[in-house]
Length: 620
View 1: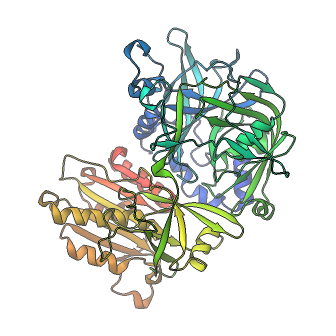
View 2: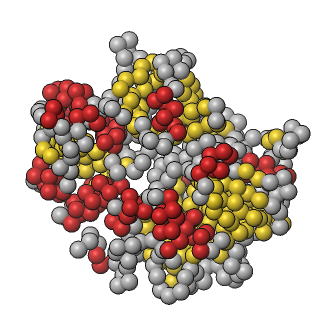
């Protein structure tokens, strides 16, 4: 029996949570078996508590829906309650009952129905019961995103709220999410936010277009625009975008929870979106992701697609819809973008741009998130496949602070083009060298087909420069008033990196805070054998420093010479966790590793009575 079984409908597809289009591309890409090892346990027909809280806290959610003519569009549903709670506007500017995102129960999400004037979805079909809606919640400050799909089942004309029944809910990895800070358009504190040291415009004033080197302004005020092709100015906006939102969907015959719409996000360096000179074709790269193929699988069966760029520096949206084709050829994709695995080409049929100031939200890139140069001061092999890179600043400025478990977004400049990746920091936030200078450390596993990991292992040497942005992520240690709760750190393979940062931090805290000395810490790590066991000596030393830490290492295929390096043979499972942590419900669990590993442990712990709020994990 699954946790929260009461929320699973009678027609829930326990063994196959994907529709035929998604399955077809998983097979074509060779990822179906690995995806199916965990996906049935992480795709749910309900909202976990942490997802509910996440959606409620965002200033907007991205929605994917169709208009009266079956065109697919992406838009933003504004969570006015969050904006009102943070604005410095005077009381007479406030709405006494602002529209909000809420969830009265785990299978229902209540959403603001009111769209802004001029939105492409503002038609009689919008918000009607029976409508498929895909939603994306994304936090640009922590690089976290979650998705939920459903069907509208009720609309309240009194408070302009529509109620969505959840059909599928799942999380996404934190890749390709640039940092942003947002504020209310009415917030007087931020009238000049784009000109002070807190933020800078994410959209520059001019962009070069065409082969003649001519430029076009992107800061000219815009009124609401509707067209069948992109203008020169709109092409420029797309060309410099580092974030777009994508809407796709498929509705087959019958009542199947796998059908519906998907809202998703795509990100990359400015220029990752290619646009034809006539404004009729948009081509997007598809980089390594979770291999669910939700969006692309929809397009195999229904080619309608929408793309939206949020121009929130001006309170506007650029919405595009059309018909898309998926190209799974990796060679053609990588010829256009280094690291791309496939492409999607959209033939534009309609363009809709909201007037400036249509949306009550503004955003910008915080100065602290601007890329800076970090110098590689050491390169250390940790196992047969993992190498650590020690990074220090090239200037006199201090490194950004971070929390144990955070990841570091980096940019690699290669001859084939730029590569953007995020790697977990594998040291404590206070790590410093003999001279007292703080440093970062990322520890990277060489992947057979990984362009970024191969470049780091083969090309990056001591003295080289790596560009980085401020560490981010929400996989961090939770503050607990009750220090009697154990902390269980679980990992396999290179998933060790963020939990190693946590272990270092906890050992340091226990040495300086007597109240924490009694808090039990369980370190449980799995590797294939001694050659792939990264940080073994470093972790042994940490265990010696703190009597609170209990260590258990599992090798799945140990060699004869590995005797004494591991505690048991096999794989980490809930039975082993229960043996090491008899009081399962009185512990916090932090895990990182392959999807199947985490899904199996999460499900097993919940079945044994562990509240999901005490289970935390990081996905790569």
